[in-house]
Image 1: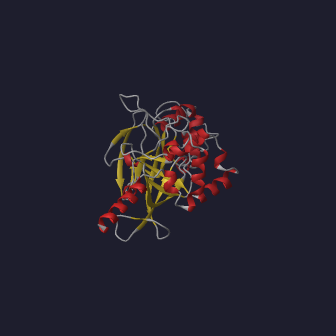
Image 2 (image 1 turned 120 degrees about the vertical axis):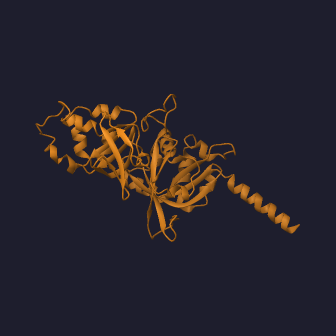
Image 3 (image 1 turned 180 degrees about the vertical axis):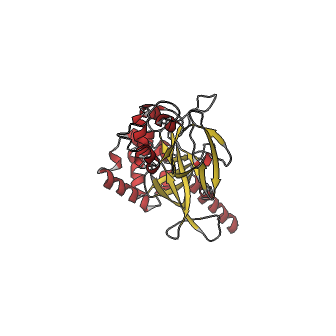
Length: 328
């Protein structure tokens, strides 16, 4: 009888733990007090996080910024994040809400993980819709793991190796995820050391990553507006060194737009229709650029090549798709 009673008590305690709202679950972590204050101050923006999910609800993974993230935000912006409007807070929370309950092992996918979020506001997510439907794709983050010997880390699949995970968001900005998950009724949550950056347009994303020659080239050929307006676009951008062949783009008298040898034709060969992340590139695939130029995908020694150009900067999340940097 004693054993039976003890067993019932354990079941009740577990049930209560699993039935916690995110607010109740994160209340056990002193380093998440600022996050909880935001949830309480903006209940309309955080409705799904303040309630208990039922067993039939779709599970989610929440990236929860710690107090240091809030302090850094105040330092960088000169204002507390709670000074934002409820709608702005809602967009931020949606971008920190990943679809599905992700385990630590899910985050250790060798080639990284592209995870859909709950963010669908067109200001930050204007990618392509699913073919033959009107379903809009939600914005994504890219999660990759790295080896390290410091801090609280995920145990990677390789025996004896410790790993943390980096989460890449808008403008290619990265935050680090503490890989031991917490549980709440809606799925799992992970503590992160910063806020994800809401995605911006293609050229602003390029600028944030120092791809200024590509931005100038688009401007000189009068296609900046079209590039930023195109839904579901991946720009594979030669880095600044690769543009040296065109000389000083600000003053060049080279052929800008006339024929297949022009700067415009060259730039168009670096635009792919659709949102391509590194997880979408398969060795041996032959894809076409916007102007029909054939591109062979090759994977060698952990690197991805598009024809003879190596991708040297990856998965910069943009409002309408993605940006990668090439070495030529």
